[in-house]
Every structure is written in C-alpha cells, then in structure tokens.
Image (cartoon, rainbow, N blue to C red; front, side, top):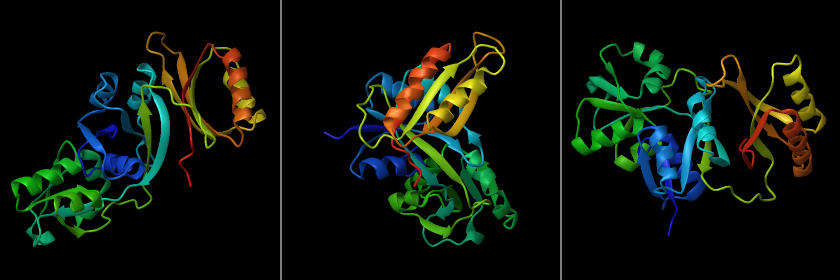
Length: 274
C-alpha cells in the first residue's frame, strides 16, 4: 500500500510536484488547504508524510512553518529546491484578449504584477490556491477566467497554457521539506542537519556556537531567529548546516548540547542543493 502524502494546496500545485518528484505519480494524495491542517493529518495518522514549503528566495523564511515543525516534534527527512514558474492557463481555444479575470493565490498575483500591467483589461482576483483555481476552471467550464499555476496543473486538468513564464523575477526558488512524525534511521547519504537551540543573554554566546560549527567543519547555510513566546526578548535559533562526514556533525552536536540552554535536532537528511 502506497504511503499517503499530505500537501498544502491542491493536486497540480508545486507541493504536489515535489511529492511526485520524491514518490512518483501513483501516490495517495491528501490535499490540505493550510499547513495547520497538514500537520493535523500527520498527527492523527491520516497521512504518513507531509510536504511543506519552508523558504523562498523572494519572500524569505516561512516562519510559522518552522514553529509548526518545532511545536509538534516533526522530523525533516528530505528537502527539494524547486524553481517556481508561473503560467497563465485557461480553457482551450481562448486567447489572452478573451480573459476577463485571473484568479490565483495572492503571492502568485504579486509575483506576476508586471505582466498584468500590459493587460489592463484583466481583473486580478485573490483566491485560496493556484492549482485549486485551475481545477475549478476545468470542472465548472469557466469561460473568460484564467489561473496562474504550475504547468503540472494544466497537464492534469486539461487546460491550455496561453502565456509561459509570466513571473516578474525569473530566478525564484522555494525550498520544500518532507516531514513525518517518526524519527527515521540515518543513512549513508546524510550530509545536512536542521537544528534548534536557545542561548542565554551572555555576550558572545551566539558567536561561540558559530565558532564551534566552524571548528567542526560545518558549513552554515541558514540561521533564523524566532522569539520564545513565553519569555519576552529571548530567541531560539534555527540553523541548517551541511557537512562532509557525519562524525564531524556528531562532534559539533555534542559540544552545542553542552553550551546551549536547549538543543533539538529537527532532522538529518541529504542536501537538496545540486
């Protein structure tokens, strides 16, 4: 029996594409309209794995998702960096002059703003999800309405792409992670770790941790601070590191566990950067 993969959004979304890249086209998909619902599906056992966007080169870190992974003790098992492409799609046989409205997620509309300045006759309408709109256009046979969505959505729902690559900034990439409730066994390909720690307010405490990472041959690829809700003006640090040998990582882990007030491993996995 195939594992059930929970995604944020609908079939045909970028989250769906990531799920297919890892687990193939025959997966059982569970569509979730929010990341909270996605996490709930993992916790109640209705899904085995979840796909979550964690950061974007334009929008930055998706901080609430870091908090969800931490709060519910989820484990990151894989990651993928996906180049984001926005395509304009509609029912077959229409041209852009025939389109009266474009429905899509607010972020997709924002990232394609310059394109629509050239087509002032089109009204932009915010909606819940890019792929869900594409599905609705096909199902309800909506003439004169177009969606901004990944090309996979056009393939699945039989829509026609009338404009390719309409995003303003072409170099737009999102990092997605695979999460689950069970801690996986490490394999020989592990060369990246996501960790979280809290420090006291002593001068140089963060610098000391960063020195440990450097001394242990860790390459720091991400550092994100987040307020500790219960303690005003105190912060947790979420850090990603890559390494060549697992022993170097274990050494760094052992030292930081001693130095930090709180230390937690969010996941060890294979670096998704090619």
